[in-house]
Length: 190
Ligand code: 5GP
Image 1 (tube, helix red, strand yellow):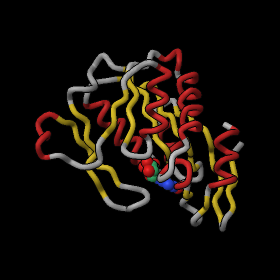
Image 2 (image 1 turned 90 degrees about the horizontal axis):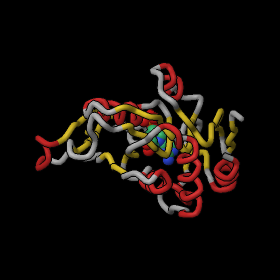
Image 3 (image 1 turned 180 degrees about the horizontal axis):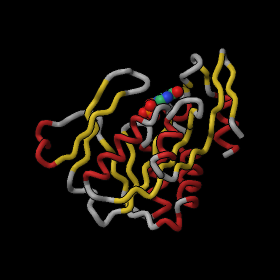
């Protein structure tokens, strides 16, 4: 998606060869108009897949996933990163290793919101090694629901997440695919 790629080139910052900072329009300050266009794009791409719910991971996936759910006219479910002791019996949980913080956390889904009738679209801001996506997939599988696809804003194609997801048979749609990050330089696959 040219709009997102141009914005990454204008306002993104390659912190090193592995991490892209997009705090000014995705991760800290959010550009709602861009999120609207992104939501429309995901909704168009997955329109004929009979998606019944959109699932994202708090917190940076929420904005684009909200617009996606709006345009698909389905509910949005936010996977929680903190385990909540009061919910323990009513939740599915799986462990995920955070790419940016290098810590392990419990990703949590309430048993109330996804069931075996659901066809779920997962939306996230970044795809690096695929840990977060596979965490979401595990929870959706625990609820016996189907995975319609994985929509990603920024894929770092030089890390292994995309290949892992495609090898596992998932329909991955990334709006911006980065082939290389280096000292202040950002290159795209296509
Ligand atoms: P993965 O789980 O695929 O290894 O990493 C994806 C998750 O880590 C995303 O949900 C995102 O929060 C974070 N992440 C991975 N790489 C980057 C990056 O280069 N920049 C930012 N801002 N977040 C990243």
